[in-house]
Image (cartoon, rainbow, N blue to C red; front, side, top):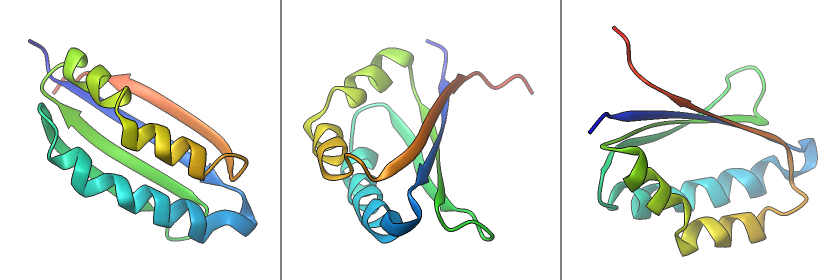
Length: 96
């Protein structure tokens, strides 16, 4: 199976940065314990604190998709409804 890299960019609304950050932080430990999770690292932009980035590696796309269906992600979506300006997700493969 091919390893899958996920790069997720989350831009919080300016008045919701701390809310989004606290909800994103809740995802880390539970996700790292999931089957197939190699790493799940959250970053915050040094110049734009509203910009968060998850850099993730998964053993397979199937295991990542199982993660995407988990309750803790549904809880995050509900808790941050209306607080996120933009969300982009890229599925990537390492080439070098």
